[in-house]
Amino acid sequence: MEFVHYSVMKKEAIENLNISPEGIYVDCTLGGGGHSLEILKRLTTGRLIAFDKDSDAITFSKELLKKYSDKLIIVNSNFKDISRVLNELDIQYVDGILADLGVSSYQLDTAGRGFSYMHDGRLDMRMDKSNPLDAYKVVNEYSEEDLRKILFEYGEEQHAKSIAKKIVSTRQKKPIETTFELKEIIKSCYPIKLKDKPGINGKTFQAIRIEVNKELDDLVSGIEDMIASLKSKGRLVVITFQPLEDKIVKKAFKIHSTDCLCPPKIPKCVCNHKADIKLITKKPIIPSQKELDENSRSASAKMRVVEKL
Image 1 (spheres, one colour):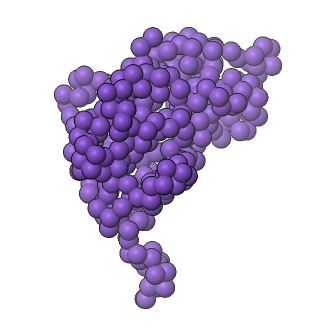
Image 2 (tube, rainbow, N blue to C red):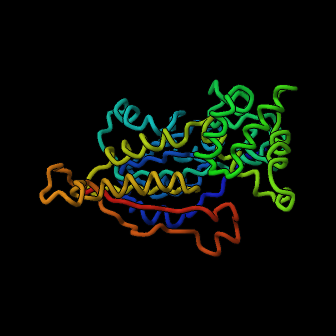
């Protein structure tokens, strides 16, 4: 199957990066290479460092981007390693960073990757296929309490308690092996009038995927290192697809763009905190109607942009 990934808000992302032809840029999530390609087209003596955990994405994108191989460094690693990798490359600061946090259409539509409830396949959900933890282990080995907590916190699933209980009682008879088996468990925990709505599966699948890939933990640490890696006037563009991600990004941007973080009741600043970025987007950019017509999976996307002071 061809690696397919619609590059969400590509035009807006490139415009907001303010690309300099001689600059050094980072694409934190190479994916299908769409964003990276547009960055590379605009570089002369500049360079792009592109990260991805998914070896399939790297294999596909290497071919797509081979024309620009002299300007491109691909790193098979998590973007949380950005500081370490830049240090190894003897790069102190970069001119811009893009992080598109979406799951690729290839990952969602390939049954064997186990990401989607629309295709039957083994429970997997690993973005990095060398990761020892997969969805099968989460579903079949986590305690009922841990499952409930994950479903509630990462999926904001109202029926987390009953779904966790049903998972545990089902796996006592036989292991839960496929996405469709999990889908039937979720369906059984919803009221009759909602059982056939496709969207009821999304929250549980999202929660398990986040747990498997430690997505929120990586984002919390990664966003700090991204900001620290920017040179003055450098831009950071982040595209999120779910409220928990956007909340983390929004909070980090607010803290880093604020001078004093002291409680309001303190008459004089004692924290000595100084802003190191400014907000370019006071409100997030969302996809155009044209893009939504072309790719409905863009619907939840939000883009936030900051610039290093």
